[in-house]
Length: 185
Image 1 (cartoon, helix red, strand yellow):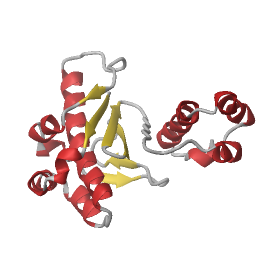
Image 2 (cartoon, rainbow, N blue to C red):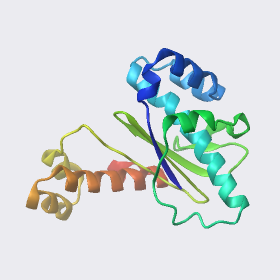
Image 3 (cartoon, one colour):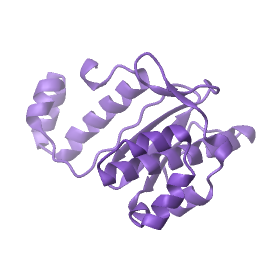
Image 4 (cartoon, rainbow, N blue to C red):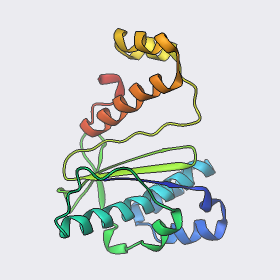
């Protein structure tokens, strides 16, 4: 299952404080260490969206509904905030590769990505990765340096941001799911 939300409501200090107060200690500490205000808001939204996504995933699994083909769902930030359930603030640890996972729920896999004003979260019963990008320009030199020659050539055919980011986000998501990283793919 994949969910995405907008962080803009967190620009209101009251909403930020409300959201921050609902976070797990792990996420509070992580957000508190971040100096950039936009990045801090992304971290707060990521913690809230993870809580929301886990709740929806568990609810769906309990009803034996098929979760493999659930499309991307845009969730209004206030729905994410209002659905918060502290019982889904599972303790997070990192594996040997630095990939976050739930300590007491190894059967639930998740991954988070953020870019600009959006945060996305994927939850599954198997390793999962997600990446979103926005507000950047494609880089042919980056493609030539890190992508396969055929991938770089495909991008050069039309020289579009869409082609570059289609490959970039697929590689990033795969690297996050496997813990290999983009440069190792």
